[in-house]
Image (tube, rainbow, N blue to C red; front, side, top):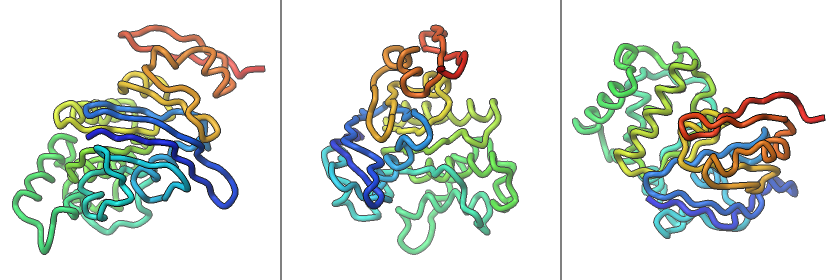
Length: 256
């Protein structure tokens, strides 16, 4: 499903957080949003998912404005993984992932809903903790469960806010590889807010660098992850190496 963001502007009170953001993601693509803290990455994801309403601009799914979608249609179209897990969720892992089927359930869950959940748990190697309580899990385990819940929605657009923030190196790769496999296999569009530039470079088709709520640069990693852009956006001197046909950033020092 094609996602188009056109002229999105959002502000809290009189403070502009996003200004004239224009981006597009095609079916089968992964777009990573990168940029310093406070650059607007999370706010943009929330505007796409209608958690926040832009002051101006539109978010279109296959040409249809998300503001006009019924909540159930929206939940069937967009899966969202927040940056942090719920403070308290007294459910098993299985039931937490099963919540992802809510947009499809009228009265009670059916056999297909359970099958979808078990398949997602298998793919994400979560079977062994399927009947543990969500509240008892580590931060990294909780993050993987929330990603699994979004997959269980069978969305056309997947939004992930720092999906690897609580994961160790192995599990970062596991989750991101699963994301790109799902995108390719199911023809999804995915948008990820990322802090790690090298992970974003490795696992994205396109990147958008946000600075002060605006799109500073957008395109393929090799075109926009340059020493000059890193210097101007992050205030860090860095060298860029080409590894596996992707740019790899090595920070050297804070810009004086």
